[in-house]
Image (cartoon, rainbow over all chains, first blue to last red; front, top):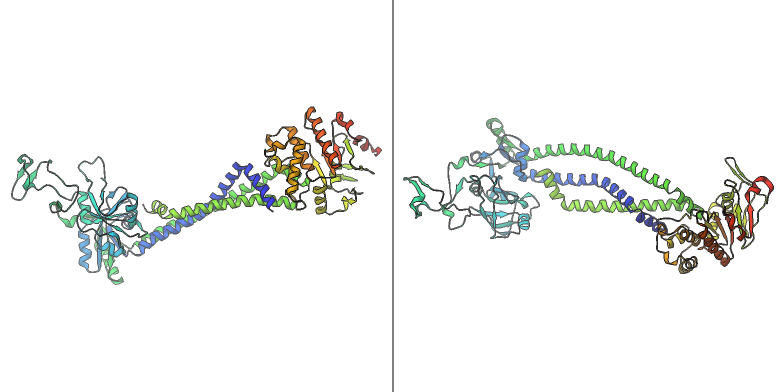
Length: 393
Length: 213
């Protein structure tokens, strides 16, 4: 038996290109259905686990999937904005606790989530290091953000401008990291959390600048009345919020129309949830209330339909591949007929010839299995990120 | 007697002596190779029997014939029939790796060394056979045939693919090796210039015409 494996091994090593091609083909065709299964299971887990724990979402009327994906997974597709009035409306109903979300901006590639401290309580997140945000310009970061950007409590993080060429648009705000979340194994590990008002500062709805009363150069003051002072652009605008300039930060306009992307509504009970949903269905023309679980179930239904189709395709390809491999082996043995005859003439039994061939097939199968298994292990290690990239972001 | 698909070989009686060197000549298709296959037990006669010393080959079972062949008969082919994916040493040891009847031990390895030394390919043992000359390949094939120290060597046009200079050299090596083991050599050949070196010549043309031997 050992001799059979030795001879088979020598043959395989000698024909290494053919062997590697065969091993790759077999591994790939075995890897495909398993990898698909792993990814779909992980996507189902990731999508459902967060959707189940989020009872209701209020957002602008439109694509409910975009609303859910953006609010739960901070995906790049942004739903239309709603205003702070919507938060007040939920609050005034006494049917649910509203947690506002504003996910328009990014810091480096990580989403900035403007929210309230209720969000951490709702998601049962704990701070691993530092404390929650307490004032404008402070940020709590997910553990992956801290690791990837090498940030710790006390460090600063700049928000990314939305458009490099928009000179009058959003300016970067230097935020101070006050806390790092414990690992949550969710997208929150890859997010930067700030107070809702901080996101409005990033947007330019609120700002801080040099006190106009202390301007030395009178030419900087263009006009002045009891209520309004108009200054030139030379006046210093703050791009960082700290204790020294915190008081100078202020907001313009009506705060009730400030934008949000969504509201997580946590109803008192099932009855409250039903009543709230009923109100939105009957009263709100430009807003919608959705149950994330239902939306994700619909999405998964579609994904699994696609999976069934892919399974069928993989099955057909697998049959074709098996036939091709059978053809390769049978042609190979036909080419080796002279060699087999020689072995038989020397005194080898047909059983031993079969054993030699079986050893070759077994070695190729073992290598293919190992390659497939190790690829699946690698996939399992990165399944979270792959699923996030494929199905979520 | 043996016959298949219109081919018919009938040999009333044929006897080879110990350590005899016999050349078999004759036109293509006259049954020279068939005779070697019958002697080695690869094919069975339909009538009559074949014996080597006290063993009646034609009465052995398939497995017994294979074991007998691999242990007692050395085969040398015209196209060498070496395996290109094995190096020279593995080719020589090949008979040991394809049967349970033989085991590789220290003596076997020493014999590989000695045989390769004798054939002048000791420095090529680790080379793949593709890297050998035609003459070296046939020497390796002779080593493979001799490794089991057989009492009978069957050579099927062993010098057919070699140039005249190599033919003489290979035949010298083959004769030297068979002499050393006191083995019987039955060689099918078309090289009439080498015939005078054999003890006996059997012409299958004459045999086919029914004159007998």
